Image 1 (cartoon, rainbow, N blue to C red):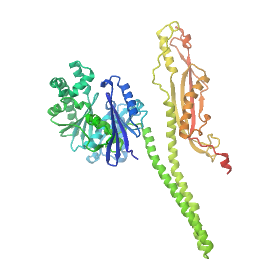
Image 2: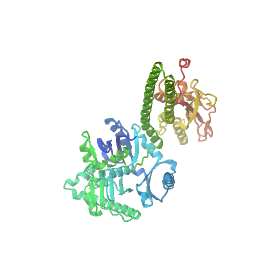
Image 3: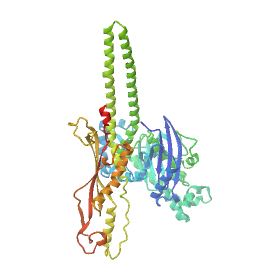
Length: 620
């Protein structure tokens, strides 16, 4: 089941762009648009913190009432285009998986990757495939900034641009597309169902910096001069400064087109489309037309997408080229993007897919029970009528036979139908449980920020007399602040619904299936086992209980439902770095000492926990 409305967000080095798009069958409408420029507008200056602040400001001044599609920066993505020989379509995933391991320059388990197969490529004998990947740790860090948003897809900058071009421009011949951003320039070649991408070294900031240095301006003044300079008397001087950079850009475009032609054969290009804020550069369009001999187009509005009355039309019209990639990401999320590359981790994609199907399944189940009720009412009335007729007629045998047939339907067919409905719903509920287990574990893990830097406390000079001691003290402080989660296991078990203990289903016919979730970890601390148990109790067990009660209800899980276990043998950590004992007693020259203890623990619970049968109900 596809979504109908989506927020699409593109966070660059100098600004945040966002659009809200609604799809009604084949009709698309922009409902809202927003743009937040970073302070000073200069890429690279505290851009990470400014991006986080912009996302917070965006969420504050807009209503996020639908899924969100985001764009990962093109510069951090790996892309490779390959051709596969004729093959059995059933082996497509297997063949591309093998190629991905050969082409991606990282271990395959350290990346999140996806692929795109050009439509119609098989008719020519070979199939054109694009493979795209980003390191898993980069995606994890990227998603931290979007924790407050219900993510639907993570696409790549030039994939968003491609989907916009194919959907709204619909080129009928090969074209070159240039997205000139503040910190990047993406060159995209669209050739029928095939496309090719290259990142160019020139970017909008290079033109701005050239104007800064020439005219001794700050960044904002240089940006204004770059865009508005054509209206003033100093336009020739400005163009003289940026002309060498435009010439370099043209050279890179020609190199890219030449390489593509060497791979794809004799392809003729006549049109180039400009996007990105850099497309407004003074003299850029005219220079590209003269030097490339192409028709150069700068986007000014949509062809197939409407804008609502509530949309900030002025903003969209004045900076339209900057929103192309953002709109393309929304088009993909709404299910009509021709390139559906999604780098959202697989577990999140599966959880979203289940959530979408859950509503359909519940509706189907409701219809099933309504049908069952209708049968009960319908056949129940027939039984009553048959019994009344039996008392008034002399044809006793015929009516008795009919009465037996009706009872057979009510007593055999209807219960079988109810049982079938329950069997249909049972696998769906059982598949939901591991995902819920992950949600509980995630609520525990996300509470710990192991990436935070720990500043060492001030240490009196008479306690530490060497640099080696200072280093060890800082390491000890760092270790004391960390929690290590060493493993998580979700295992299906059987549990007695009365005692809530694990049972053998072969011996206990009342046992029901559930899942045993176990989280293992370790903690370095200069404390006792009792103190450490209290830490695990407050930091992990209580968070797990809160998450479980949030899913299954406040009364379902008691305090004893989550178990804590500390390893009986607590290893002692030793070091020979020159100090002994706690920080307050370390002496220079000691060679071996206790550095503390490593507390190993496990936290476990059953999920979902069966409700304990009510004794009164059993007696009835």
